[in-house]
Image (tube, rainbow, N blue to C red; front, side):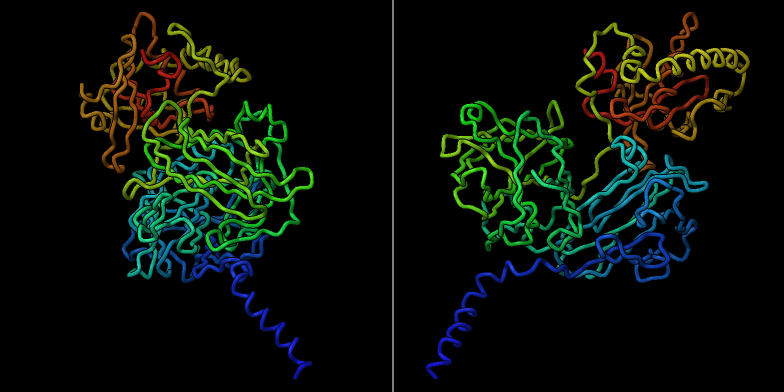
Amino acid sequence: MKILTPFFLFFFLLLLLTPSTAYQSSYYIPVDNIAVDCGGISAFTDTGDRKWTGDVATNFSPSEPPNTVNKSMVKSSNSNTNNDPLYKTVRLSRSPFPYSFPVTPGPKFIRLYFLPENFDEFHRFDAFFTVQAAQFTLLKNFRASLVADFSNKSFIAREFCIHVPGQASKLNITFTPSLDSYAFVNGIEVVSMPENLYYSPVKQGRTTPVIGNNIALELYHRKNLGGEDVLPSQDSGMYRNWDGSNLYITTKQVIPIQNDSVSINYTTTTPNFTATDSVYQSAIILGTNRTLNSKQNFSLKLPVDFGFNYLVRLHFCQIHMDRFQEKERIFTVFINNRNIAVVDIDSVNTPFYKDYNVPMATGNTPFILLDLHPLPSESFDVILNGYEVFKQSNGTNLAVPNPVVALAPEVKRVAKNSNATAIIAGVCSSMGFAILVSIVGFVVIWKQSKKKTKKRKKKKKTREDNWLPERRCRIFTFKEICKATDNFSKEREIKVHRGLSVIYKGIFEDEGDLTVAIKRLKDLPESNVGEQEFVREIEVLSEIRHLNLVSLIGYCLENQEMFIVYEFMVNGTFRDHLYGSA
């Protein structure tokens, strides 16, 4: 018996130690783990060894009513630039098509994947639709081609979080095209998450922001600072993607640190599913120069949209590095130039995170400004391992207008009497000469055609339709324009510009109250200024899809009237950005 005593004592101690480390033993395993290849006939396994199931003749097929006139169809991709099998097929339709997924109650990730391209009679620019999940509107009047072009990416991936109530057993996701348009989707994910990962019911008594079950979230940023990209297959069980780039860092000199060999000591308040090991094994610091550090911040400038609150999560972990002594770090967190909190880190390899609620109702620039300023301590330094930024829903809405991005910093604000053509040529100098030649040719054609068509009856299309880019933007009827502007009501006037044009706020009620800006141009016979401006703006904005140019929706050329329809800009028109609002 005396011989066996040490043996039993060893296992007794092992059992005592097991509960304290159980939360480190394995990553989270989602209860619901759905990955659908929309338009796919068979299943495939991606490079991360995840299985995607096709939605053709499977349990994940759209549940369309039997009497649907235009049922959804599947198409094969024509793209040779994207080899991801997820984008090789697509489901699209000119009628609404809903998916119904069997799920358990609780919080879920919803991820949507789009590759806008031409499919036979379905032109990429004609995709214009709304996406709803349960009671939440995720995307509204979404034009995937604009979003992809503006971001300089061939595909679009969007991530959302919603909470499925306890009485629900299904999650419905519906794609609804706008009038004379179609909706499409290449892939859908529905993945469970731990109850307390992002959602924080009031009953927990937390002092951090409360994300109730009635709020939906949309991911805007998720970064792994100082390290590499963390692919979905490398995440802590929920297939999140962590971007390893230094995009949005505005501090000139920072030091990335990384130690993949350290063991991260997770805790009950920061369990191992919070973020993957790679996030806490790398970081950005300012360095060892105390004098320099005392005069600078570690700063980030994060683009967002106005009109929402944001959940900002900062990940911290002081990791062991031979180059740098593990000294206490104390620093202040500023968000939008407001002193938010003081962070004190004195333990090594022990991660934690801080959540902050950031309102962005209005402002001058659509950015969250994050600054970490070192305070006197042993190190006089800061550290940040990663961050996540989520937009919070307003009621049941998460949707924003299609992107209209402000002028790039290198494009200077010009005086009122500056020439708009010169500005555009400055932004697109490589195309300036070609555009100028095209404009001259188009103006000549316009003048010749107009003389022959002045006596034509109302609503008859003019010959200019032959050159106007009908495949790149929408052609509106005069009747639609009148209805959208309430017959050019004075209450809808936004601005009158030098007697040459009037800009109206237009609302297309038949398309989910789509709000636009409508410019009505006047033609001055002695100068043809109205015609020139119409030709120039239509051609340039339809041919050049650029971050610095306003988003064109369409035009109307009818009843000897000229209208240009743009995305509605809450903070002013494109001309306001060029000339000032005065």
